[in-house]
Image 1 (cartoon, rainbow, N blue to C red):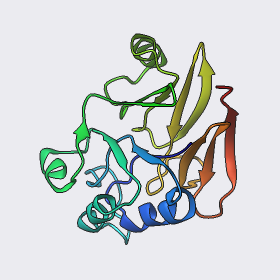
Image 2 (spheres, rainbow, N blue to C red):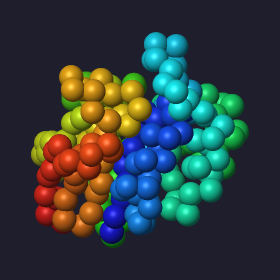
Image 3 (tube, rainbow, N blue to C red):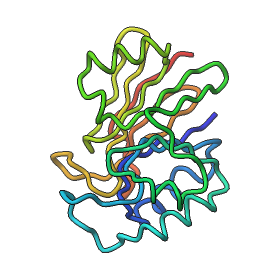
Length: 187
């Protein structure tokens, strides 16, 4: 199993493309935890802001893409994305491994995330929204925020995504491929 995990692309087509080409093209599935196309009024617009181009890349991806709705994802975004934009979360089961993906803007605290993960019996709970990385295990659940490949709020501004395999989860810098965080999953 290989799952690409991404969040907060905010319409930046080339950052998606870089992540896809380097880390996701041989994945079985891609999970996007929201804020797919629109850059949002508080975010700077990078040179490659092209929501129509990003929508086309997602729509034509040979790897299936599961999307959880973010606070910047609108009804019109859902109209141009061919797969459903799921709300308030997306739920995926792979080989008995339960994955919940939500954007995170409605469950911001660890206590809220813990409660939701427990209720849904999540093995992996993915959120985005804050554009910074989280990778930790609390109780029986792994909590992951892959960060953002386009609008990082990390102190070092590194652009990141995550990759899940049968053995581990890695958060990687999409520009240089460096593994920044890693957790064995012990399925």
